[in-house]
Structures are given as C-alpha cells and as structure tokens.
Image 1: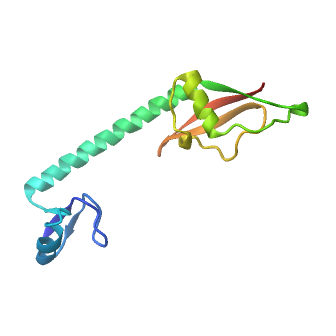
Image 2: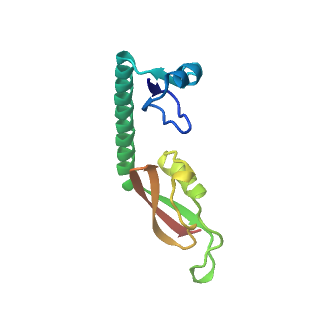
Image 3: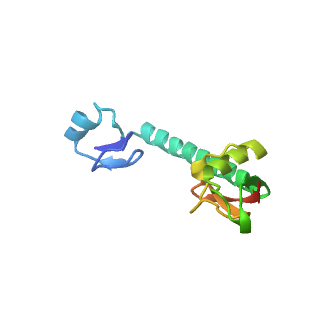
Length: 148
C-alpha cells in the first residue's frame, strides 16, 4: 500500500514522502496514529498543491532576506569603547552590543545569533560584520568602533 507521510517516521521516511508499506503496517500503525494518509489521487493532488505553496513561501522569504541584505549593506553602526594609551581598548564589542546598536541607530531588530563574529572586536577602526539572514543570504554591515 502506498502511504503519504504526514510526519517523520523513523526508519521509514520524512514528512511529505510517498512510501510503500505492507497493508497491515499501514492499517495497524501508520493510519491509526495519523502518521500518514493513503495515497489516493485526491491526497496526491493535495500534497502537490501543498508542496507548491511551501515552495512559493520559501521563495518569498528568500526575496525578503535579499531586500533586507541590500538595505543593510548601505548602512553602518557606530559604537564607542574606552581606550587607553596607544589605542589599547578596555573590553571589546560583542554581537550583543552590535545588535543593540542596530536597534537604536537603525531601527532594525536583528537577533544577535545571526551576527557572525569569530572574535569580539577589540580594536578601534571600521570592521565588516557578516549577518546570516537566510541560509543562502549573508549581509555585510559596517561597524565603526571609536574612542570614547
């Protein structure tokens, strides 16, 4: 019997896949637990429409991320940090402070976890910080670190 899975089933398949199982397994396990539907022409058509809607939504999310990346690329954020003699800084600038500065200066709320910073910024100058907005889209934000 062909079944359309409505949830991930261990050792069988992922949600949305069409799998062939024995009649007993389908009747006694898959269908009673609502883990799948029988692969009738109506259910197959519904699956096709659902996948098309998901693909369209994923495309819209990607386009929004690309627009946001384009707007971020033209902007910059300025942060002030205490420094001593010879340009040595006391402390550093982390993703949390950059995200807060974006909210205050640009009015954009970006999660600090999306900022890709290998090490906190410990020097004075201008840095480019990548922001991972989407698995396929990474924006570049200019961060200026100045003396206080």
